[in-house]
Length: 387
Image (cartoon, rainbow, N blue to C red; front, side):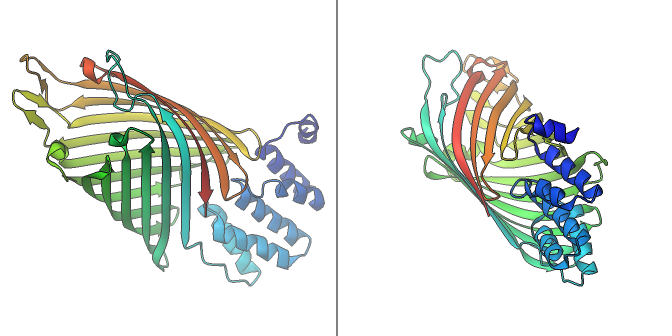
């Protein structure tokens, strides 16, 4: 039946994988090798190398098997698969290689946005412009000893508009964390610091304490999944008088469930945010910038071929402000917003390192105060490099 699907033109990661498994069980190792080889260079590359190692063992080729298992042990991001590869290497009398110490990611994109200032629908005009965007991240282990490790990371985000320089945004984030491997679970406790620039001048700094717990225990035999809970507490410091209203504290609870089934991948997220800022008091007017927020979101993607993936994501955010707004007219209103965001995206993965991406997104914010009702649409085209 699997061969019939393949002959009819069906191409998918799960079809190649299942054909490889069936051929392996039937001891048709040449065909099995060809099937698993089609997964090399995709997101299932580590799984492919592990199975290619099993084929080599079945054929009595220990040297080739050892090479495949070393690739898995050094590069796999799946703890269970890494442990299996280490066990195979120990059976072969080989010392498993140390895991990759440093990783890096870079994304470069160009795009267009039709409402930079988030002007309300009733505004006579809006600001729109094209932009260049870049995202970068690097992380690595400064210290490792058994189940404990100290990890460093650095991240940056840059968005520069072609004409509207007042909306240029730059962010730099540095952090370190203690990680502890507790069997099937992983715990971390860390410190992070942010520097934010707006319109090419410094706006604010943030100091953050982060605690996280990750477990694959929520998976089943047919579903590869993991759960994550993260707690954050941060202090915000403003650099300029016009941003002093945003000084204060921000607290966040972030929970995620990620799963993979065949060619499908998905994520569910719930986030709770609580803000305690100074707020803005100008003469007879008062504006709260301390919302309490609940966000529910999901992501879903499907691998059409081994290289081409399409997906969508959406989130709904309810924001309730802790203090009522007060206007010159004397009217007071406690602001409440409902924001819906969704995207359509696609990615073509040339190899493990290089990919091309595109994304089309829309944001719609409804509010009981007219000035905070707005829509925004964005389109981007970019490239990703992973090292």
